[in-house]
Amino acid sequence: MVEFLAEYGLFLAKTVTIVIAIIIIMATAVANTMKQRVEDKGSIIITHLNKEINDLKDEIVKAVEDEHTLKKVHKEEKKKAKKEKKAKKKSLGKEGDAKKRIFVLNFDGDPKASQVDELRKAITAVLTMAKPEKDEVMLRLESPGGMVHAYGLAASQLQRIRSREIPLTICVDKVAASGGYMMACVANKLIAAPFAYIGSIGVLVQMPNFNRLLKDKHVDYEMVTAGEYKRTLTMFGENTKKDREKMEEDIQEVHTLFKDFVRTSRPDMAIDKLATGETWLGSRARELGLVDETGTSDEYIAAACDNAEVYEVAYEKKKKITDKLGSVLEGALDNILMRWLQRSGNKDELIS
Image 1: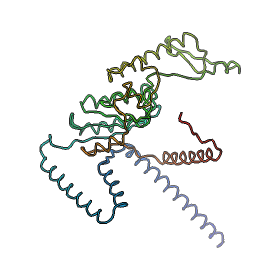
Image 2 (image 1 turned 60 degrees about the vertical axis):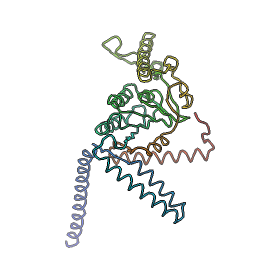
Image 3 (image 1 turned 90 degrees about the horizontal axis):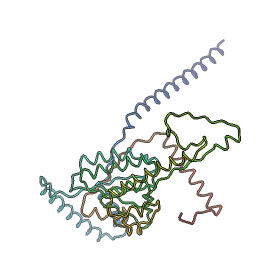
Image 4 (image 1 turned 60 degrees about the horizontal axis):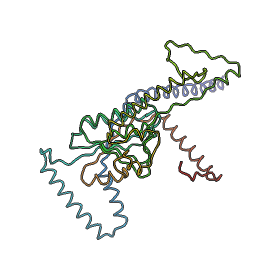
């Protein structure tokens, strides 16, 4: 009897422990969910790029200069800082004497222009501070293009800056094509790296059609529509000549709107000759008038820091645990694939 009670007590203790553990896990999950709802709102992150560049300079100086030179450098920096502080204090209340500010934004585009929500909020934040003809907005843009409506919205967000008469500079280091170029052409000044891909002013629609496969497998596909052109090309139905002609008509209309948009933003560009869907490297794009200058975003920012206060502005959402795990797994798979390619001698040696 005593042995039974002892075993029962041990069983009861384990059960209570498990129940308490489950309650704690559930409570933690609920708390995290509630917390996530608040954190999903995100926040504006500001980075003073002048300070960041100066910190990098200090690290280099400390590594390569001797002690005597370091003391001399620090003494000169103190004098400079004191002079700037005095000048800043003197200019208080004199808006015309205030130092220029440049607000740096970033957009890394995918086919859905997924970052447009972060971009619109960052622009809203900047527009609360930026002053026309005094400050400037600079966008680092990378995008091969994507959905028309998504990139149309992204370009419209940039138009908000232009509408406030705030100078907009856009720098492209790698690619601004199709919808990416639709955004880029909004700039007052468009700068591209010498080997960045620029252009692709065209429209593309493509889809597979499985109709013959379904017929071969004796599968019927039914689609009922109201409206003559509610659906034109389809993946599973039989596409007719009339369907294709209507789709081509729609594509041409979008292309015409795309060209008109670029023409409005860059009136000196020979849009009818350049809207062929081709892309050009930055240097050639400058000759053709698609961009204004060649250079990198790093060059522009470094030069700007000499005469202005430069701030990087980004709207960031807190990543969920699932997103973080997904990023880790994606990175691990990429590393495994790269190692396999290197071992198998399939390393890509061509730029395509």
